[in-house]
Length: 220
Image 1 (cartoon, rainbow, N blue to C red):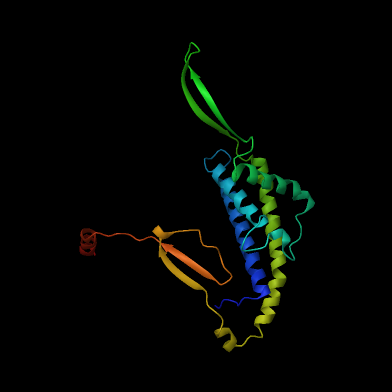
Image 2 (image 1 turned 180 degrees about the vertical axis):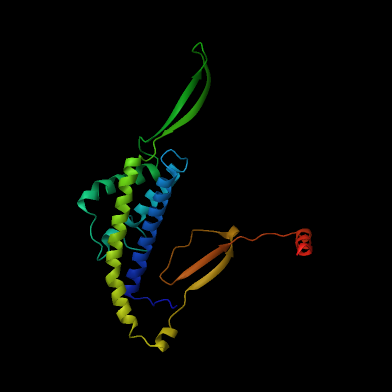
């Protein structure tokens, strides 16, 4: 394998691939939610994550174009615009920010049998995504995934044609992505993705005592 050099088409392919990855993440999370069932304790976190992943391609990013501003990506069909709008608003007012009336923080008093107040607590009433909307959301994600795939095909065709003209000598001079290693204790999301491919893998480092190592060696 060789990483393609930085060109307008490879940048376009990278952005489309990034959007496709987000949509796949949304589809997988929503599929897991539907498998778990609306009454499962996994329903709300999984549907919430699906909403977050789905909306990512449609909001401003510092490293890629919005999916609805990219060449070759058709608009969302009119029949799905309403569902798309509900999901985007749900993300903005409820999942990413707590502003909607789907969440009600309520200070309440607990009373004894005589009606006298004995305690005060704060409760939250939260309404999860209804199953009917989740099923519509599944169809929406599938359609948008198809739109991205449709936009990706001509880019791949152009790059395949261009690649056939590249000699082994030229290809051997292409820059290889930079892969770094770090301990999981140094995990961070503060670094912005760049056009020059770079990826850090964070590994868990276990501390082994001399006694444990000796014991395991003796047992081999």
